[in-house]
Amino acid sequence: MLKVSILQMDVVYGKPDENRNKVEHLLERALKEKIKPDIVVLPEMWNTSYALEKLADIADRDGYPTINWLKEIAKENQINIVAGSIADMRSEGPDGAKKIYNTAYAINRSGEVVARYDKVHRFRLMNEEKYFSSGEKAVTFDLDGIKCGIVICYDIRFPEFIRKIALQGAQILFVPAQWPRPREMHWRLLNIVRAIENQFFVVGANRVGREGKAEFPGGSIVVDPWGEVLLETGETEGVFEAVIDLSLVEQVRRRIPVFEDRRPDVY
Image (cartoon, rainbow, N blue to C red):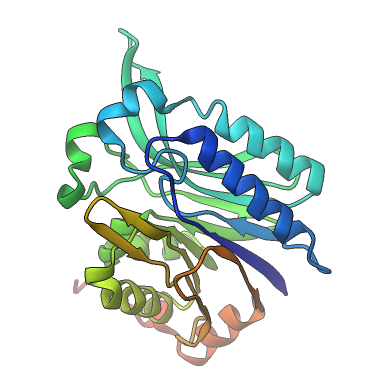
């Protein structure tokens, strides 16, 4: 059994310090619970939001300071943190060119970064392709001996990408997001369908609040391998918890052997 806590939050546009303070307060609430979480999950771009024109100035540099800060919290409290995604600038290539990524991190109980995933599918409606470099690979990682995968928001629309993660052995898929109200139904259905077709747990952490003309409805969700919704939040900020039984993954895959019955030679 695994306790997962989602930190559903409004994100302050272009204010990393304010957003870190908000996460700190939410983490304090999560850790005051009688049974503390095994895994804490944050939403997409929670450090800066989509202040795209300011990212060259306010994005993290190789995860600093945000990820270093979360590493200390994870180690001190012996919790795993799926650190949503942040705007992350890195120097790459022989010329040291600076590139900005929409990057998800995962940190284990020892405070070690066990995964760094750069968003592969950039969302044109938010002009991501103009400001972010694209990731080039799917990522899986282990937390407490459990194989996990992570994608970011728009990625959930690409079933072949998610299936690749499932074929790498993932039992839980984390989906940090900034998913807007007009496509709220898509968010809910896509998380449920990805859980059913890949027979794993899906943990989707969405933001709330307004940003310009955009409105974000929350609706963070935890879905089991049968497609049953274990947790679905409303539109308020807060800490939302679900307990998942990983043995269900094996039970469902044994009951309906989708992976054994695949015909990749045909498709």
